[in-house]
Image 1 (cartoon, rainbow, N blue to C red):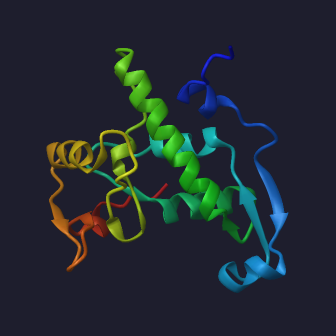
Image 2 (cartoon, rainbow, N blue to C red):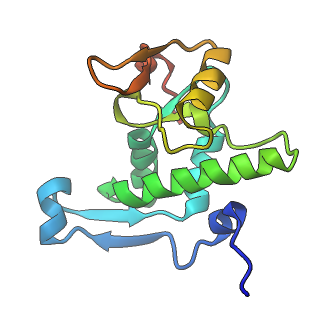
Length: 158
């Protein structure tokens, strides 16, 4: 029986990534024309690791950093989101092993400053960690989503 791949193994497995591709006709309706990068998971993790206490980043900022690094039009929204999720779970796995220096995944938000309910421990874990760093968590309008109040003020510039 094959042993289950750990989150840390998934994070380290870059396969043939990063890879640059041309934006095809179908994708151009959403992304415009040009090229995009499918990053390696570890690249996403490296950006997330640079976010210091009290600061924040969104998936869109990560995509912009990746696009600039690879000299392309955009960073792939799908894989960037998936790889941030893998980085978060790898960090949680490391923390459960007793490691102290982990990727601060709770500082990576979705578009609009929304907390990512799919990260380890869900919204309550994220809320607790973010509030401990001085952020205020509020409900976004009439939606069920929670967000960091005035998150734009804490976005890092890498």
